[in-house]
Image (cartoon, rainbow, N blue to C red; front, side, top):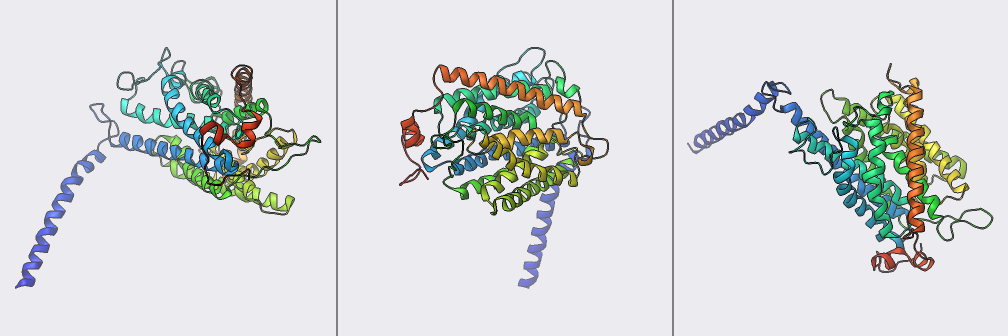
Length: 445
């Protein structure tokens, strides 16, 4: 009797649970059957999914800031760890506010510049909820362009002066060049886009912008004390924690799925899955060829060069992640892994001190990625970009970003000063700039 009672109770509970589930699912099933744009013009399920995907991708790109922070912190000496971490925080603080206040208006505003955007008031003709998602996604891209530069300026730059540059980069430099390639609503599509320029997720728009600004910064700053000898030879200045840097590269690899696949801002055609695969293939190829190149030439599979190879592979596929084939992604990543080593050695040869290889990883490999989009061998049938458009984009962005950044850093150097004193550099920026140390017993190593 008790068993029958228990069975009835279980059956009754199952029926109630089933009714609850069906009741909850019914509205979703009804929404799924509706079109993405219902008759009344309001957003449908398809739109909501796209907005969700864009926000999730933005969250992944946001997490890349932690990756950059770990890579840069691992590549500097212990006495400068707090300083480099603070710069990465500052890029998010200033980049988020500066891009919202000024940068987004320059890049995407209407007939006149629309600063301090409020999508509830002016959504540029789009659904306000979509504009919130799009603004968030673009903001984290702007912060990425700025944080690329912090590594090249590491261990010798005044913190306060770096904050000025971060605001300049995220509110002026990046938005102007970005409007050329990704379109600006205040004058229709950007002039590079009208030429047929292809840079799907930002090899030039984001990474080369950061890389060329980093080059200008490193030139104006000059090398760290002890980096180069009088005869022109260089001395390695080892980072204090390659384990930390390694974790940073893994985080960046993960975040890049949001960076590249998220640039679809839509899940409609499923292309995000193909883009994600191509992103990972290129990263793997870049890491492998960098490791093998260093192993063959210098007789050791160097960890720091391998990590830069992975990042080179990621940058190398960012422009063509939508237009290339899997085999093409592997080839561009493999070339990027070799190219980054050659570039790092050449940058060192001309006595430019770039502690994290930002110029080579982001500037040089960003240009390679953009050029590779015009090579039919790498691309899906009929999707290779016009060579003239790609060369125009590479050249114009380099000329603009490098020259403007160079002048900006020279002005800072001549006015408020750009570099810390010799005493401060030798003791470490953590103590003099931030009043503390990251470890109980810190050293130059």
